[in-house]
View 1: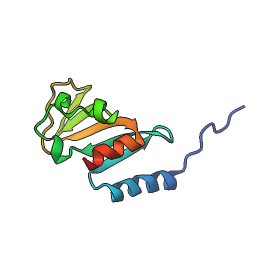
View 2: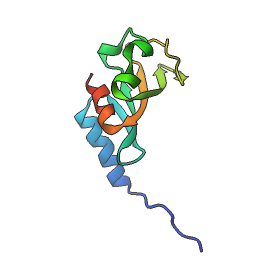
View 3: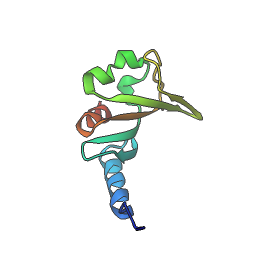
View 4: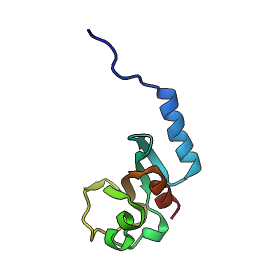
Length: 106
């Protein structure tokens, strides 16, 4: 009756994270939700610094939602559209993998 209901592949999972880190230097962490959707922690691209989330239009342009912004020791969870992005902010984003790739390279 008791048994494993999930198989964990730590080497594969770490390999995926390392690969994402090598391909995009601003990606700090990658959590695969499915084969098509992920959560990324990404250092805010310079092109977004000084703008609000509304001005960046990440959801409209890329289909990416910012779940949180890490700023030093502070975490802004579910940030408002008027929240500005500062240099060295870490954006916690969710979306389709292809769309998240666009934000990394922007």
